[in-house]
Amino acid sequence: MQYAFSNRIQNVKPSAIREILKLVAKNPSIISFSTGSPSNEAIPVEEIHEIAENIFATRAIESLQYSMTEGYPSLRETTKSRLKNTFGIGRDFDEVIITTGGQQGLEMTPKVLCNEGDIAIVESPSFVSGINAIKSNGAHLIGIEMDDEGIKLDKLTEVIENSDRVKLLYLIPSFQNPSGKTMSLARRKAVYDLCAKHHIIILEDNPYGELRFKGEDVPTIKSMDDAGIVVYNGSYSKIISAGMRIGFICAPQEIMQKLIIAKQVGDCHTNIFFQMVVDQFFRNYDIDKHIRKLCEIYRDRCDYMLDLMDKHFDKRVTYTRPEGGLFIWCSLPEGYDSMELAQISTKNGVAFVPGCSFMVDDQAPCASFRVNYSTPSKESIAKGIPLLAASIEEYLAKK
Image (cartoon, rainbow, N blue to C red; front, side):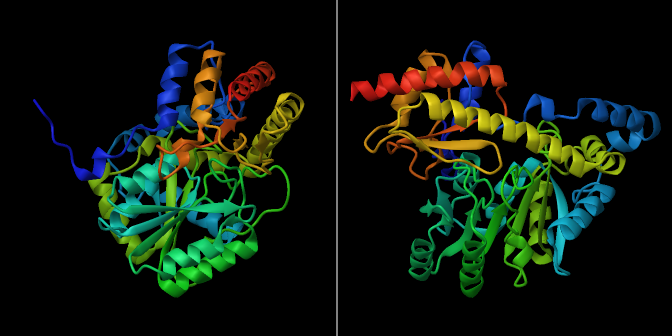
């Protein structure tokens, strides 16, 4: 039987990160710098255990029945209140719903806003699953390079002003995945003003924003949103538990009505039991204290990895020095290909994600690659960075 697949999915490739996870699972001896998972020490296991026992003892049926598409009402109110009081997010025209992880928001937003052939703009590089979500909904992707302040404004302006089909701008302004960069406040304001002028929706993805361990916070783009052009996509995966798959969206009500319909088609509602767990965590424990603990863990891991990279890496290799989040973006000299390096490195026992995975054109050679410091232990980092450095030396010596 020859199968004919839809245009929407035919050209979407599996996530390179998920494929690397399979490889590492088959060979546990490989040191993985390839995931974006929280540290095991960052997951509040005892607190979640206590909350789960209480829910089953007092509200078992409620936690195991069907529920509202928009989300568990108490968690929606908790989320809405925290967004408003802590981050200045949410106008009178905005609404909040709970999603099945941050990924669902990335998939639903282009689904309700973009027709086939419409243009969606992304940072280059950008999150592979965000790219795939937009591709799978038929939009034409354009990637725009970044500088130290974020997406390049002149290039963005040129693309927007030369086409009337730009519908969506997908951004990860804080501790960007994969680069670790943070967009400056001036750049955020300029990007927002440009999109407001041309009536373009910004999808602001911010799963890492609370994981700042150095420097000063930068206001979100959504906190500036008086025109109702920003869909804010958030997640509890990085601050409570990734496996629970609890995320949220804050967006203008007119957009939200369509997002709710898209969610009803997709999964009816997000897991109600875990919504109740997350809501109770906020009520029972000091979330800000918990996040400070996470930031201490990640600052320690990031500094440790960077110190080892400074010591062992070839000086021709450059890398970002993030102030938060989970990732470091490394670049080989021009003309080299991180995919070739990945083959050598994996053979030597260390996995990372090649940079081509984060590009609109994932077939073109890319000299950059992403490493993660949140998941591996310090012992694994201590062993893995010298092995990665040796792999780099081996690869550079071949050219």
